[in-house]
Image 1 (cartoon, rainbow, N blue to C red):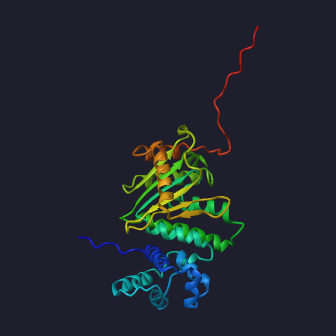
Image 2 (image 1 turned 90 degrees about the vertical axis):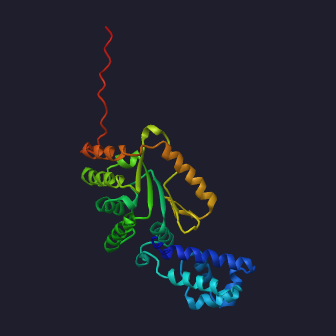
Image 3 (image 1 turned 90 degrees about the horizontal axis):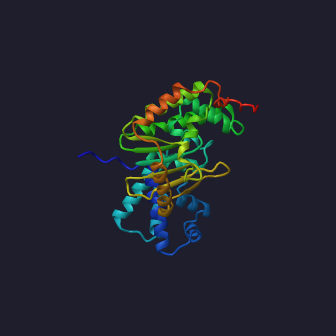
Length: 304
């Protein structure tokens, strides 16, 4: 029998924060009361329960005593979660990534099943380096220095290591507009389409195309759904171009968006046709991206 893969730091932190909140609620203490009893600032407990920071074993032991958790096996299990959750992925990029996006990256690197719908651009996990550089320059050049832009590109490419896992599944639905929009011009887009065709041929990854002929998508914007094999709550991430993203671990939010994903999937092109379509698009990409070619229409005949 194969040895099960140990839970990732992200999953262990999610498990620990969930159990700590449950324990606090069971004894009827508010966050302010706990912070006062532990002689912590209120923000420290808020950040621990939100998963923004880990908790040391030194701090966890008295907290468990306050929560009246004394069973040796339970205490040792929670201490193990604290030890295993200290090193979160991508923390070295904290100066350029916000906390919410760091949480998203932690979930992304830990998910057993990933489902994403993208009506605007190629998802970061699937981008070539050239395509990613164009996107980062377009959306981030006014807020970051040149070295920071290079680190943003480095981080995006590093994320793609999650695609190399043998135990995860990923499903992506791309609106046809994503494939038609020439980010970086014909050469960059041609390379990107070929890369998508290569990825689509992988047995544990599925890329689907939501064609123009399917009408209006059921979704209002990009979203990503994560499921975890460790029995943890699923995670929903809704992108928002005008402000912070929305995220949720509520089961009802996950079910609602999963149903939307299934509707999109039903109306999408999928299977062996997708790599062929992507390669054909790459070969016949327009060389003049700003020219919309329309069929010639003969002028109406003049009446005699």
